[in-house]
Picture 1 (cartoon, one colour):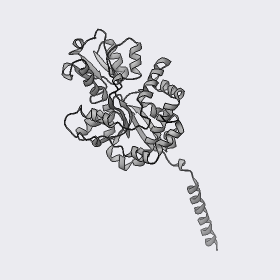
Picture 2: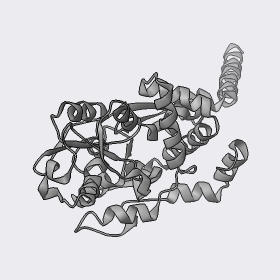
Picture 3: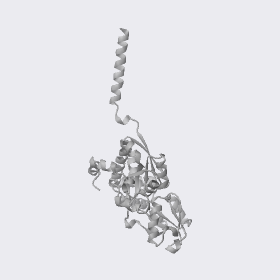
Picture 4: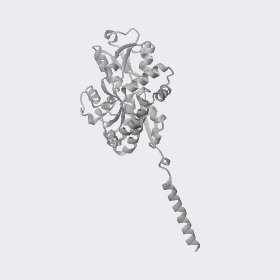
Length: 333
């Protein structure tokens, strides 16, 4: 009799434990960890910073760590090695690594046009002054490196007429060009506005040309688009909502920019935010023309956009009505 009672009590306890487990909210599950690298603390990261600030990553069951890699190519190398899950980097780095045998894919775009202005050191005003001098880029194969070719062409020069060297992020390059350590360098916001405020000479401004270019993308390892599709889809959804919130709530977005960029000058924050609004595709849709323009800079290797860009997650979210939902919630951009 005692054994029968003990068995019944055990079954009751086991049943209560099972019911409690089934009743536990999904949020109680361990969050999926995502390590996301950025090339530099620049305004194209605003969608991610806003998603973090507003809790959108957490709402998707993610625990996201955003890490500054001080260069797009350096970050892409870390992504390839598995040290990152996602990298904020332009398509140039993807093309360079894939031509070397790697297999990365850009799944979304945070900017579809070139955002670089080329600044020169004191006393460097003409192409003749620049010839034979050092141009500082973040890392070789990055957008700052690739677009240097276009800037030089505007001056009637080519890459063989100068010496290109890696100088890291925007702060390091700005300091180097101001001191005359290098003769020129490309900068984007907020470093463009800081350079202008400090009287640094503009040599070539590519921004007004609005050249289609996959300038800042969400890049992953190709195999993980299949093996971690759910996690990447959640990350993409949160990024898109962060982008919509940043586009619709100017005051909040500027406060986030000021905090993350460590800038107190409201004028520079205003310029950086307005630049973000002009360049940011609301749904983070990659530009095919932008991809083709980058591929034209890389002779050899595949010229098929599909070997570098995978819009499958974007297409699935579009078909499911996610972007229409964002437009209803935050207003059509």
